[in-house]
Image 1 (cartoon, rainbow, N blue to C red):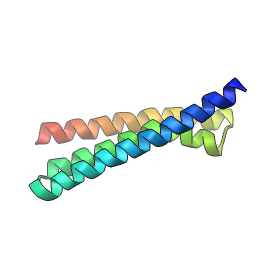
Image 2 (cartoon, rainbow, N blue to C red; image 1 turned 180 degrees about the horizontal axis):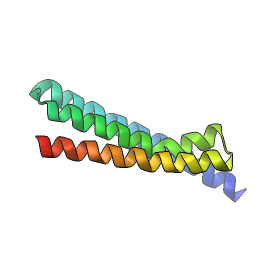
Image 3 (tube, helix red, strand yellow; image 1 turned 30 degrees about the horizontal axis):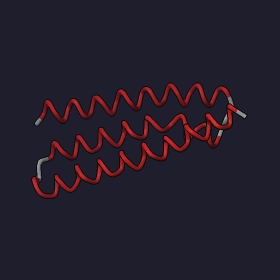
Image 4 (cartoon, rainbow, N blue to C red; image 1 turned 180 degrees about the vertical axis):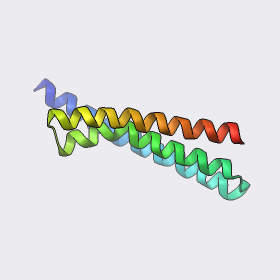
Length: 95
């Protein structure tokens, strides 16, 4: 019972993360339309990769709750998070 409630809370927080991340990406993209600075596009790409990396384990658990899939989902999540932060750092250092 507790485990199912825990999973439900994780799924709800995952959806909230996707909504907030998507809204932030849209705001940054709107700023790019006004300013036309390519750095904002790189930053948006990095943020997109980061948000996908954050919610990936929850999405994988939803479709494939097998232990090996969960393990590789966690590993892939960390790799995507590192790539996303790296792209965002590149955008800031470039601009």
